[in-house]
Length: 342
Image (cartoon, rainbow, N blue to C red):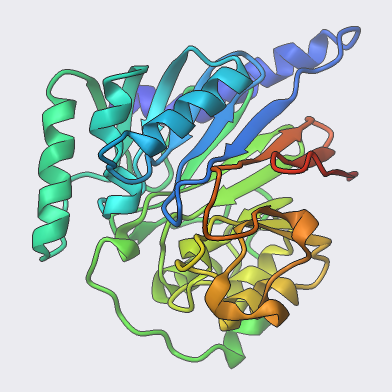
């Protein structure tokens, strides 16, 4: 299994070359659905080959709210089976929906960073419920530097279990001048710091999702040298909380667009929002929710917000990406969309 996972980057790259060979046919887009799970995470990636990856499963709810929203997004994407469910870490808003999701959708395999190491009764409970589901499903543990075999796209693990890639990605590794002025970050012994973070690429398009990775571990990816490079799309880490989103990583990634998976009262902190908002070369910031506690000055215009009040209807934000780096973002609430060309 380890060799299978490590070969994934080469397999995906080879498949992309084969796709490029058929230049007469227009490339299918990669679709990304940022599903509203009220301040947790559930991000569905539907690749051009028809394979799919779900990052996290939202919260456990008595009525199966988040599993239902994931299933609805999968139907919109034409996904009948989720090939991989990747769990970034074992906090409830990320792994809590596993049981309900597994009862209503076919899942090929679960992917995670290995055993829970957080000394918390709630996290141990979350992990135990997840383990029961794993007993009947294929399970893959990945490390930093590994990949997943999705045809046509490349999924590279950047962080896992508190470790990060040790070498720069190809063509990357430049010194980061922002590191010198970055305050020293506090250590974090919990699951957030162990988040499984990934870079997903489709041709020239690059999307990063670091789960709830906290600042000390974020900075290890980009200080003193930027091991990752730049990205087109940035999922604002940790729902836009101040424990994450260090300026030295956000600004050096130079995202063209950022999407914040916050809730009405979860995430969207003014400090983190401002760092992302002011990032050089950022064209737009989109939010899953209006951040009620942040005030109007730390929220984007309504057309960029999927859910504008506390009585959310579960609207998602959808991204359609092309291999030339062009991508379109659409707000499901109002159908407002914008295309970003490379």
